[in-house]
Length: 338
Ligand SMILES: NC(=O)C1=CN([C@@H]2O[C@H](COP(=O)(O)OP(=O)(O)OC[C@H]3O[C@@H](n4cnc5c(N)ncnc54)[C@H](OP(=O)(O)O)[C@@H]3O)[C@@H](O)[C@H]2O)C=CC1
Ligand SMILES: [Mg+2]
Image: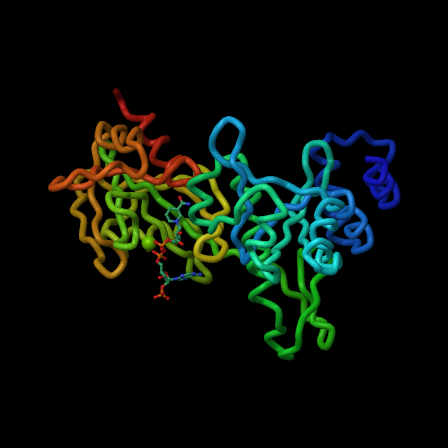
């Protein structure tokens, strides 16, 4: 905390003016992105979330479920030593945030080490990200999702696309620079809209062939370059189910690490109740259907994924609460008369 205050004072952020805890945390993180030395020092007393080849470390929680344990940098140095690895590997950690109590948080991928040897030194197992998303509770997900996206970006964007030379990251990992031509690269996200279409009394859910059996979700699609969110919603609904959107409104957003790193922008939309004939684009979707409020409420309550019964169609279920699709569907269901 003292070091934290020193950095704030030096950068003029801690002065006579009162800053809320949130503002001072954000200003501190800003400083750490700008100052490599301050970031290096923060790492020494920070907590580090571990990954192995992009799989996060998960630990069984005391009261059931799973959590993502954070390690102290000092403990991690000891473990790296035991595994015969130089503690400089720690410098490859990337800054991901700062806790309420002002402890800086970092993420580190130990993919250069053998997975089993690392697991033998820590409590927990490295679990593939999609599986981890089903095991973790909502609280841990934004941090894991952000860490995964940033680590992946650094692993796959190491070279300058102009000079072909290796780029260097700043200590925080918030950018990479090509020292031959000065080009700066920042981590990227693809904007995606996800839309729940309603005709006033029913809502439209669809499934791709790659979804788990019985799972239906809202319509989603990547924004094309130059499009507004509104234009993407209209185009995707037209492309995927052949309907024309009459009105739409924004309701929330979420970072989503699949397939790479997306910013999901969630919207509700309506179509004319007299023009609801669906024409499914079979290149994109396996099925799309209108659902009544009662059917949607049942799907929301259903255990995911539901148990399959021989000879019976898998009952319809929807993505878990960790996906913004669930929020959209729940919001719509709550607005319908009982
Ligand atoms: N969090 C949530 O609640 C939900 C999240 N999603 C996410 O939304 C995303 C988009 O949904 P989806 O219906 O698949 O999208 P689209 O309907 O846009 O179709 C996907 C196709 O778009 C093309 N495409 C265009 N731009 C990109 C890009 N930047 N990255 C990858 N593919 C691109 C690809 O085609 P081609 O291969 O032919 O080039 C891809 O196969 C998915 O990645 C999914 O994970 C979806 C539902 C719920
Ligand atoms: Mg789609």
